[in-house]
View 1: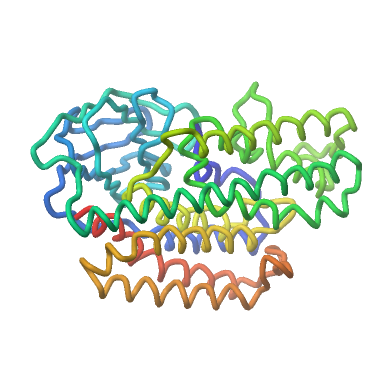
View 2: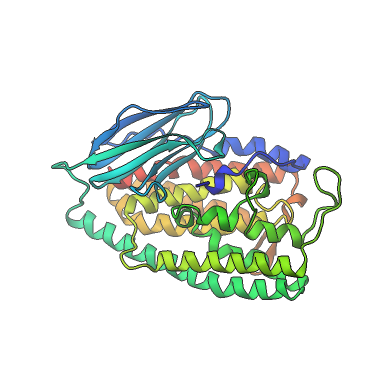
Length: 400
């Protein structure tokens, strides 16, 4: 299980994107809000261990505060009983900069795990049990109605995006398989937008996201690299590989193989979100909004997401759209509890959307990321940072 934002920092960047990588660190704002009534649990991630201060908690709101004492960024995961499905995660926890994961949990069996360096299989996987509590995880009255409405609406949105992704992916791959690279390149960014809007959902299904969207720099030794970015490299081939050898274009047979794999995995995603009983909780939706903005800070602003096509701003736009849809799904809950926070988030979304629109749109295309100046990159990073701060408090308010 590898999350998308785990795949960063291991490729050579241009001067402009190297600057962006430094600027983006300021856009990963720690969530320092404390949730009233939550069970507080400390997590210490080191280079080799993942120490969780408690192995049990009563049902209801649980707040994990993750501290990183290693020298590289880490991630923390709360996994379902199968050890694969992600119930909650907090990514890009920098050394000395604690971050929080707030979730509302039903009784049951779970697992906790850390991923030092944001790569590999993870360390310190341990059982975590949620016991029945009189407080429980149930909402009541108007809040329950709002949460149910938010969940139903967001699941419909996810299903709609995936239903659009499936045929769009086939159209893209048909062009690629036929050797019509110009058409495939023209469809690449707009097709990926459907996926980018609902990334946290894809990440929750174990190995699906790595199969579909893993970057080359994060492929473990001995594993086969598949998905969108494998095809991206073939459509925008580098002048030479890292060792100086010319890039070897994929054969017609290899194109067919990688295309079939991407189609199959996309169909698996469709089946997962359309399965009977599939649903999401309000805190999962709010954490998804936060996670999508983290994706912008950790991949798009750094220019590492689309290192060959340089279509990072299209991904940025899709992540931002998805984050806003997720936020607006729980906005009525936030307004009822903290109207001033909702007003701040609304304003920062508007501001960042306007700022990004200066570079293009998904329908007309965006400025290639490697053509941005250092000043433009810094301005975008500042905009992400301004939205990240209030948005990082979203789940604390939703479940509080």
